[in-house]
Image (cartoon, rainbow, N blue to C red; front, top):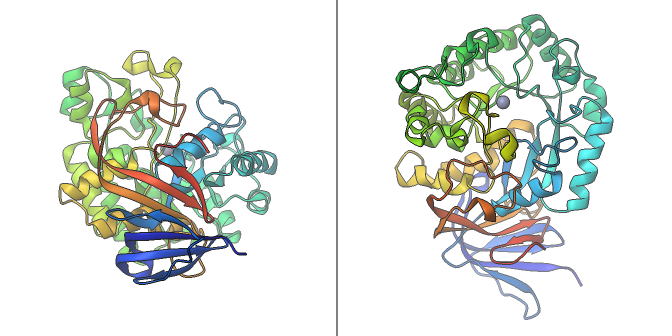
Length: 433
Ligand SMILES: [Zn+2]
């Protein structure tokens, strides 16, 4: 007897297959067997009632921090994967800035083993560009690729040396690995802790100019021209970076970009309004209104390929301190869909583009399986209730992190079921499975 699951009566939105309409998704033996308007369900087959819901490919996140090994008090691969599926994500890419840094097969294998044991979201490790992410010596890309890394990054810091970045692009190209880069010129950042502008001046906080990001994006696009390497710009936050990526794509260069929900939804004025709340401190910082507008336009017109959360859990030790001293980053896996659905309500994004930027878009960037409900694809599915309203209580997050700027806020849109490889791994209202 094969294992069959019917997801019935939902609005299937699958940009990769060009489907948008009420359909039933039939899953057999962990794969999508059929997406059809009318299909007879055998009496003994299991079913999910998806009426008035969206049924989309499971979300793919190119940028999360799972903190294991080394900082399990902040998050583990298992708790991060549980947060992922609670938010509709069926695949996440784990950044290498753990302790130790993921710059060798041993760390990659540990992350993969923990993910397999958790049995929730698929976890794709990202290896380090340089050993220890110190920016001095390249890591062994062949070893990282062979052990399962899908991309390379020194995320958390930039590759300041242009010469090392050139060699990284050349070396990664030989292994077919994209570099996903954290773009900031540390000399321009100085001691800055938020976006440089009127809000920072009023708050008396040191600023980080947008150009700290712009100059590095422009430099790396120039190095892509030199090397033919694959560049993905992580957490794009400035109008200048969006412009540079748009222009690079127009010239046919292999450059892609991602943007976070918070850089799409919040600005430096929200830092001011929050009264120095460290839940509004991240890197890159929340930017000016014109940068937010440019990021939204870049996402809408395809300049930016993906929405990525940059899920960055911290404990109270790192966050319950003064703004200058607080760690950067917020959790994002469990709020991404709701926050981005807000952009649709504001008219900044179409429903189709929202789903694409969470599914097929990111899958394409790193060449990952998934991101589609095409027949024969792995049955990774999110069932979403776009009308569900809820108040964010950090204590109820599956992540160990509580650091979110949407604390206590009313949000609309929730993931009700997440299916990975045909298995229901998250069902709203049910305890951990
Ligand atoms: Zn980063």
